[in-house]
Length: 350
Image 1 (cartoon, helix red, strand yellow):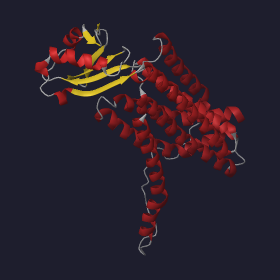
Image 2 (tube, one colour):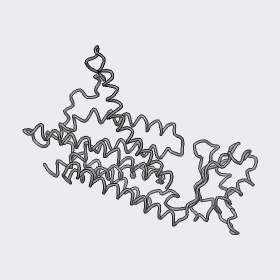
Image 3 (cartoon, one colour):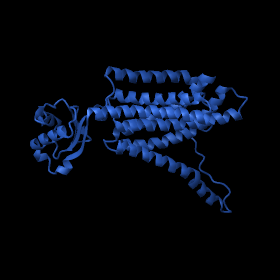
Image 4 (cartoon, one colour):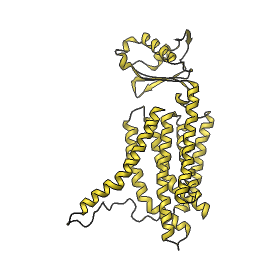
């Protein structure tokens, strides 16, 4: 849909411009500084989180596999017990309204008012719909799973609440903050497109890494790590009964890209070290490669987490779940590049 395509386009432009900046702009600035006769070197700081890391990551691979398997099973078990994931109206269809009342109207009063809502010459009892405060007591979110008939359900709800709580609606334009209506057929189509987007992305990832490293097991290892990240993130959403909407699918695809980026950096270092340290064992070379990338991995992830945490705390209720998905995904993706993807290569070739 439009908003998700806009999000993807923004990411693509951001990645290309970031690459251009890294390769040309930063280097140009360095060259300008070094062109001065009095300057012979540039220091970008000596601070490192790990001075000379020499962790034996591969020794922990079976423990890491076990922990990941337990987390995935807990998440899948939660989804099975709850009858599936908590899908939003994007996928199930329905009507959503975000309303602002001033002064505050209690949720219980709104629920009572929705006991009788006129929709296309029939009366609906919508008291069992999801009605909750959304950020502040003044803001109310109403989610109705009744099949959307254009805007008929939303119009019926608005007419009922307007007549019942007129004194709390001083300004019509301020009262209605958001309105969405999705038919069941559109919901099914969006769900199919979301699954297709993830599967196509994973397939292209395998092809790309296979081409880049000339060995398919690198691609398989990366994809297993990506599926691992997505399943754990979905499991957390299921455990907390958080809604999965189209923006969350966008977040999952972003997690796939972020995790893949970190994994490829480690794989690239493995390829270099295999040429440089031919006398070392394969396992020692893998451990060396992970440790050589460790400071970079922690620095990159830490910087990203600062931005995502800012979104989570200051971004408001609308993008709270999106930011939360990114937060979990960045943490799990950082872990999987070292403890899942690389050990899989060791098990495959070791």
